[in-house]
Image (cartoon, rainbow, N blue to C red; front, side, top):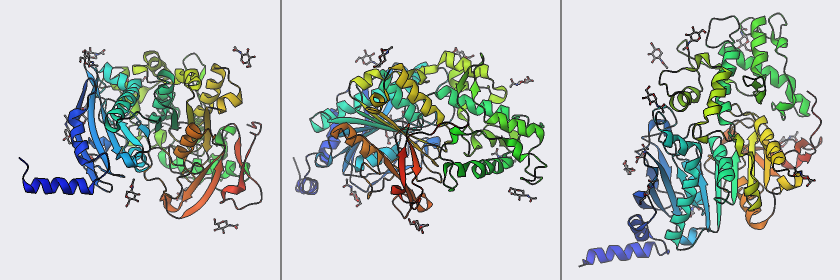
Length: 548
Ligand SMILES: *[C@@H]1O[C@H](CO)[C@@H](O)[C@H](O)[C@H]1NC(C)=O
Ligand SMILES: *[C@@H]1O[C@H](CO)[C@@H](O)[C@H](O)[C@H]1NC(C)=O
Ligand SMILES: *[C@@H]1O[C@H](CO)[C@@H](O)[C@H](O)[C@H]1NC(C)=O
Ligand SMILES: *[C@@H]1O[C@H](CO)[C@@H](O)[C@H](O)[C@H]1NC(C)=O
Ligand SMILES: *[C@@H]1O[C@H](CO)[C@@H](O)[C@H](O)[C@H]1NC(C)=O
Ligand SMILES: *[C@@H]1O[C@H](CO)[C@@H](O)[C@H](O)[C@H]1NC(C)=O
Ligand SMILES: *[C@@H]1O[C@H](CO)[C@@H](O)[C@H](O)[C@H]1NC(C)=O
Ligand SMILES: *[C@@H]1O[C@H](CO)[C@@H](O)[C@H](O)[C@H]1NC(C)=O
Ligand SMILES: *[C@@H]1O[C@H](CO)[C@@H](O)[C@H](O)[C@H]1NC(C)=O
Ligand SMILES: *[C@@H]1O[C@H](CO)[C@@H](O)[C@H](O)[C@H]1NC(C)=O
């Protein structure tokens, strides 16, 4: 029997939450959800503004003190779906109340070697009314290798399966929670998340209507390999060798690249707009030229090392397989490679993934890394993680899917030339004209943007994995996710995007500069007259002829 107290409480709850999807419905949903091979761990109602504690989060994902912020009145569900008898994907679902739901789904991916739920993008999505989802890609943690060692099925989840499972489960949950099917499905991810998105479009073209893919790590195994290969080209791991270029020398080297190459785009702003157009001669930094002082200038052996560090990568047969490192970018990923005076790569994913997934050897180190180790990994291609074969996007194209991709020209992790190469390969593989490919897939380069976000450029375009969005710039011109929605649902293709540079990169704060960006192959050029900090001073022009 209901006591008076309980009745009053119930009344209060019903009165406070009159929306169709309520506290009660959320609570009972957990028990009622019926999805094969799935265990619901949690379903709680989180009012807008609630701080959600996530004590189960592992340290490399920011735990155990990590918190997320509810950005709408929503029902949060955490569930685990088995993907084989020895693997499972953990999924987060954030479901805005029915009257706040925009009828859409937003799924998210991961970064690096995966394992961390992308709460930033989920928060943005739920705040905009998307039913928003995330996954741990089948394992917990962005560092280490234990979760991959002898776990082929876990590697499959990371390689290609988790996002597909997330999409299927998300559509099921939406059906069961809202009692209606999703109107349009979107996905946003960066880096590994970009790779996951392209792979998904190739393998499971029906999952999403629109993909927002930043700095996509499509050639994942070669991207990771490149950190070891470049480190060895500059003398590592022998920190005493004549050819080793010391960490403290690199800032001067990069500064000199910017000094020499930045003015060539017509605007002296510390940003090399199109670094892939140029070559850099480190001879200018040799000791004796007087450019650098005695403590940082380059010996003849070091000149050679630096030159090699900016050469593209060839496989064992001598064929170029990966483009050169980005001129003007921070080099830490291959140059800050010592810890307490002993050789250790800053970029730990190489050691982790080759230990756990490629060689099955928990003692392996990249100290002797060679192109043979890269080629071997490609042959094994654990979990199908390398997405270079995903260049056939014809099924996604034919079903009417849309892709907006963006790539920083200051990307120290995934060289931006890879996106250009991927784009032209997709085009030629499906024999598409420029109009054809631009009718479903547009690539925007962002000069002065680091990997996924940050940097001296006007980089903020509603980037994936970056929370919060600027609530005053939620239009298709300034926010790439909104541009994608507009393209998918209204057919208006993104002709330009405007990026914003905020003071101290405080998104939504004071605007320092804005700039117009253009779909590849056209380039954003200063009009030669206007204030360079104003978007309208930049226009899209046809690419200039390569003058390297
Ligand atoms: C369920 O969620 C709680 C709270 O986040 C967590 O402590 C627990 O480890 C989870 N259990 C399982 C089996 O996932
Ligand atoms: C991942 O962590 C969650 C707690 O956040 C736990 O419930 C789940 O079992 C873990 N999954 C794996 C594969 O360890
Ligand atoms: C959540 O609360 C914030 C702060 O009050 C508000 O700006 C925002 O519009 C709310 N979001 C939704 C979806 O109601
Ligand atoms: C899912 O459950 C069914 C039985 O309900 C079982 O036959 C199947 O093997 C399970 N699949 C996975 C991936 O665990
Ligand atoms: C990995 O190595 C261990 C120990 O050497 C061995 O027991 C195991 O079968 C190997 N696993 C694979 C997938 O090769
Ligand atoms: C040499 O140049 C570097 C880079 O500009 C600077 O940090 C350092 O202080 C200089 N050293 C001397 C001895 O002038
Ligand atoms: C560096 O060495 C010192 C002294 O041996 C030790 O206390 C410290 O933990 C080491 N730091 C790292 C990052 O390994
Ligand atoms: C790396 O190569 C050197 C010389 O070829 C060899 O002496 C050393 O044992 C190798 N180290 C590892 C970890 O394989
Ligand atoms: C590629 O497209 C062009 C123009 O549409 C057409 O003439 C040509 O036959 C196509 N080639 C292939 C291999 O499909
Ligand atoms: C350009 O515009 C900014 C404001 O956006 C202003 O601070 C700056 O003074 C202007 N520069 C010139 C040369 O007019």
